[in-house]
Image 1: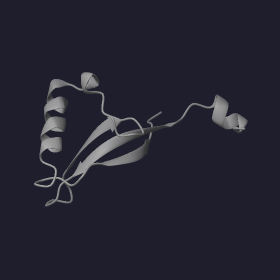
Image 2: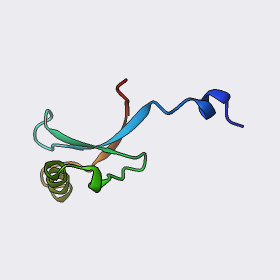
Image 3: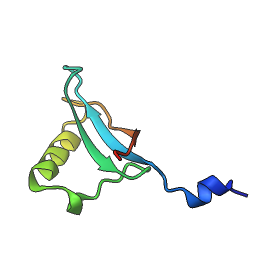
Amino acid sequence: MKPLAAIYLPDRRHYELRFQSLFDTGRAYAFECDAAGHVDLDALSARAKLNYLYARGAIGREFSMPEVRRQPRPH
């Protein structure tokens, strides 16, 4: 049985799919996703969609495998 807080309180976290640069530790692309790492491409702007597709295509050459991170939601 779930505790009452888990049933009635909304989840205050969201997730991001982060592509970290292999060469520049300060460079990365991050996209909002679900807990499984699925990005809603229809919700992205045209530029964000291009960046997502670029980062995904450059895995192993410019970016590491993406990582799903849990982030607090802004209030």
